[in-house]
Image: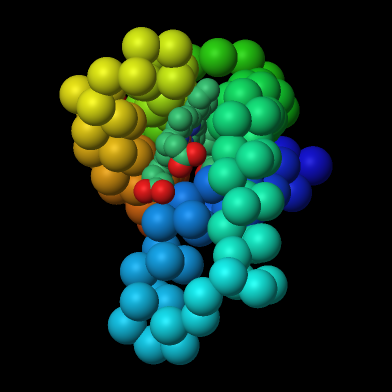
Length: 130
Ligand code: HEM
Ligand code: HEM
């Protein structure tokens, strides 16, 4: 079950960052305008905020199931980076200050590194501490 929830979260993270990387790919390849492409981007943007909160809840449940409790782990480091991402997303949403959006995106990059470590070396922190 925790495996399923972990991969579900990876999928949701891909959907959350899709408006960014879909546009990047489209600009360099197909150059679609409007139509199904535009509708997809619009839809992904609409579900972005609710998905952000869903990822945090699913991450908590996944971590709890995987470890039978909460402790320092590459997964908890990943979750903390995602909480910060969501916090700056919220700040940008309410304050409309570009500075917060910049931090929203910067910490997404850090979360990406944390995700890579969590997937490739899940027990990295355990080895470092022992
Ligand atoms: C929130 C974002 C998170 C994502 C996207 C994520 C993703 C994943 C994925 C895809 C796996 C592999 C599952 C499998 O083996 O089939 C995994 C394993 C695991 N995750 Fe997470 N996880 C997240 C958060 C957490 C948290 C918060 C914890 C605990 C504090 C955690 C603890 C673990 C553990 C213990 C494993 C098993 C590692 C092993 O095989 O040794 N994860 N995670
Ligand atoms: C937790 C995982 C999250 C990830 C990985 C993430 C990632 C991103 C990325 C990559 C962008 C840039 C998209 C673009 O350039 O068009 C973006 C935009 C944005 N995010 Fe997030 N985000 C997350 C959560 C949230 C949350 C929880 C909120 C607010 C409650 C939020 C609010 C926003 C806003 C307002 C924008 C810009 C406007 C828009 O494109 O609709 N994000 N996010």
